[in-house]
Length: 294
Image (cartoon, rainbow, N blue to C red; front, top):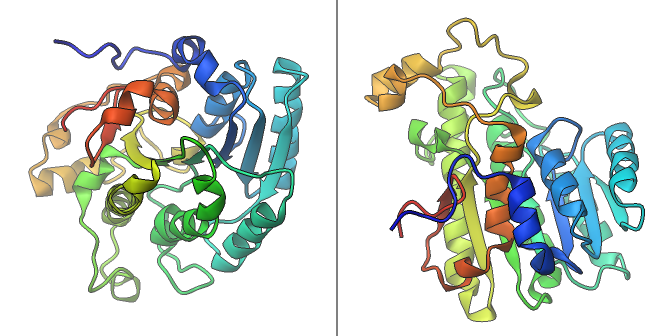
């Protein structure tokens, strides 16, 4: 039996179907900015009257701009903006403290860890961690755990972690996550390490907190050209095909199957709200708005 949704399913379609499940929910999404997957996700669900959208990002100006755009879509929408740099653990702790002390946010129904960077040049975070691992994993890991009490106050708590099929590029390099001070750095291996960590985080949270009715999902949204990869010249060899071929991955000989923003954000919506996932065994990794394997 084929899955009910696929790679062509759109976020717009799913929001219409899940409208009663989105209505009244408090949803916190990181990495929200115009033209991003996170931005499209919150724009789509804003039409279904959630109780509150908490928009987290690094730029106060972009958050303010996007809040105003969402208010045009739904003038009655309650929006809270949260300034946070996930690559800085001090910033993460400050943002989590703000959420925990905010009396008008008694619970968070859905946390979508969407923010991230991809294939950046080698640099260390303020905490001395390779920047992709810091921003894509350690920051979201700390933030999620610091606000977990508020998440668990929800009647149906969910955490969605935007990973990638880029996890194929590397396991976690437990013995050398900083690539020998950059000497052995490969931007795509570093990206793969962080994406693998995302998947393992979802698995760990689900297994430890399932008895509380909690669920966590990681997902691959597909290949969508957004500002995430705007620093790369995709008309040249950016190194991805080369590393895939070295590893023997079929992606090294295949082209990209591109998606629109609306199709890419559909998997966000599916993982955050699909009711059938409540009965899913763990681990759950979502691709193209369905679970490819148990």
